[in-house]
Length: 203
Image (tube, rainbow, N blue to C red; front, side, top):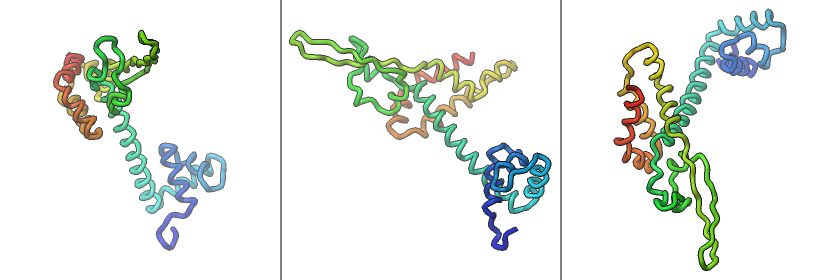
């Protein structure tokens, strides 16, 4: 162990590779800054490293950092799924022809629920060009399905167990609350009427 109690560059490299390769010491040793070698030698050397307290502690820290990144990525994914499932496009759509009133007014939660935008060009009687936009929203049912799968509702159903509907709803509400203020407020305002889709899907 280094006198200053810090990892050497080679040890740091080994620790990172160990976490990347899911605890495969042999592969981690071969891909780290240590000299490349055959499997048996790499396995032996990795075993020696993993017995050192300083390496054990470093691996634990690196795994914790990796899990934080995963959790952050998962939270962002859930936020996007919830936006699709519960964003209300109605206030931004012209009830006469289904076009978008003004693209520039669409908030983030609504934009996230849009799958595609069609540009329609027309001409008024005076010859003036009129450009309108029609949008196709992402599949709301698919988003709900993904939320159900995340919460394990289908697995519970397959085992003929009682689905934790309150847990599903709590997960969704927690994700909504994690969204930026205006987006969360807008989605929460209409959640009472739409949250029932989840309970209906579970029955």
